Image (cartoon, rainbow, N blue to C red; front, side):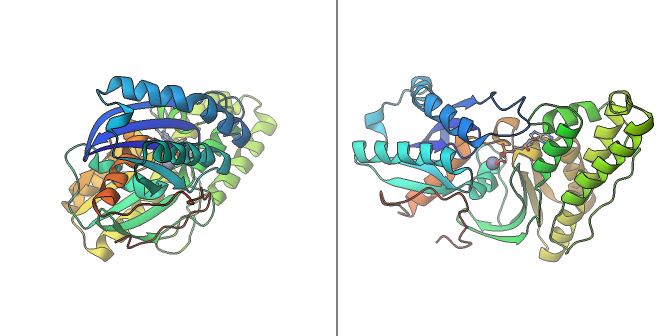
Length: 336
Ligand code: KG4
Ligand code: ZN
């Protein structure tokens, strides 16, 4: 069985081909147009997807020995994400499924992030707790099987990745700022103390951090116009340490309460070096097995979409051609 998977929910056009649950090829086109604009501009993103989708599919097919006629199904991100971006992937997927007369399989983007630890070995054993940290979401999930997961905590406002990106913008960094803050923090000291939000046990809130960094910078810049430039490494280290401490604290609560022995992280922010190290340390402390996605599978990619599509294919969970892209798609905790 061969599945072609499509991810276009935000600013990456990614195509993958699976043979059963084995990834055969993947091609991803990253949009650079947003880097100087401080964030993803939705209209530009959808236009870029339109330009990239056919060449990316062709490139992925060329990397594999598979031809269109060999495909058994098309998997595609239905949501959540940006409407215009999702529309490109969903419309393309429908066209391809109809033309080849093969099933269409819709995939929830956050479900796919959770499954990103199953692309390569070692793979988590069920049940496990997954912290999913991306540009749009900060969620804790209890995952009981490939198609059965429940959200036990989420963000009340800005997601962790969004906090990295917005604070990076204040510091004059390009979008997305997460990777650059990570790199700069490595030569800095977390010497500035920013508050950690006091919200529910499994809730996250990063908008207070954002405001407190803004106020802090404004007050310093009055007398020291070069404050950011001269202290960039330490500011980045302090912001990153605040975010990682918050994430680990909640993850630790969840592990204790749900009494699991397996823990995983996923999403763009799971590429963060301090978070990866902190998860490793926490797992050692509690004698847990831990799983960190390979760097390629942290940020948006079609491999994670293909894997969910594979599990849905096995269970005959297909969508019909009336399926519509949904920017606010809710998840169904028990798909099967
Ligand atoms: O999962 P993703 O590719 O897209 C969404 O679904 O949102 O996540 C993108 C987010 C961005 O906010 C980016 O700044 C963040 O992941 N990110 C990082 C790192 N690499 C990517 N944040 C912190 N440290 C990193 N190394
Ligand atoms: Zn994502």
